[in-house]
Amino acid sequence: MENASDAIIMAGAVLIFVIALSVAMTVFSQARSTVDTVVYASDRTNYYEYFDVDISNNIKNRIVGLETIIPTLYKYYKENYTVVFLDENGKGMQLYESLTNHDNWSKDMDGNIKSFTTTKYPNMKDMEICSFDVNEELVRREPWVGDPIETRKNLEAFIEGEEYVWPNGSGKKYDYANIIHGQSFMEYFSKNKFRETIGEYKTNQKGTFASELNQGIRDNKNKRVIVYQLIKDSE
Image (cartoon, helix red, strand yellow):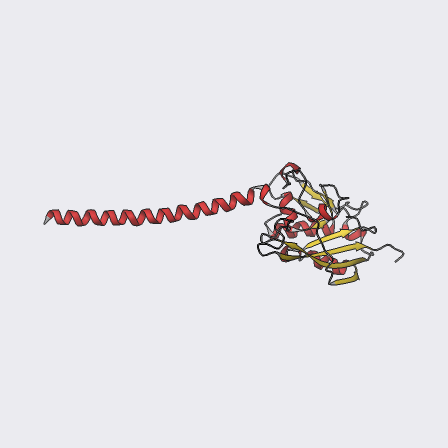
């Protein structure tokens, strides 16, 4: 009788051990999946592959001022679209210069930066920024990326000509007071008009630009791009 009781106890212990082992394996499997996702996201070789981007599918073309442009800028990071600024000649207009470590940017095998603006507007140097785009800011490792509050703080500082201090405690900051001919964005363009053009370009399911190899594969979708080209005073 005593042997039977011991056997039942041992069987119960084995059953509990098996259940605990199964739970542990499930937890480890989920943890491994999370780690793999984080590692993939941190690997800069996994991000962008670009080719010639077509934005000929325009759905709107109108003349606007800052009263239209500023509300649009406040939506770029929430709605994940690209806002590009061009000068009178249709070339990229430098809005500010990135202060992040260029060595940490996502690049292709030839060492070229993978972004819409450097592909479409080759007059821009890597550190010269002429657009607002969440994905491109991620490639550059901008300090506000991933935090909507910090993204808004940076945008407000840019528009109003103030300083944006990096939240990591490094003391680095973007000073937007004198970015365009000694004036802030709002000061310099307060009386100017821009030609607004809205179009789309293809991205793959991860939100990156579709390459010639994967275009049309894996649920390609469209991403909106809004282009503001400065109008000459004579127009």
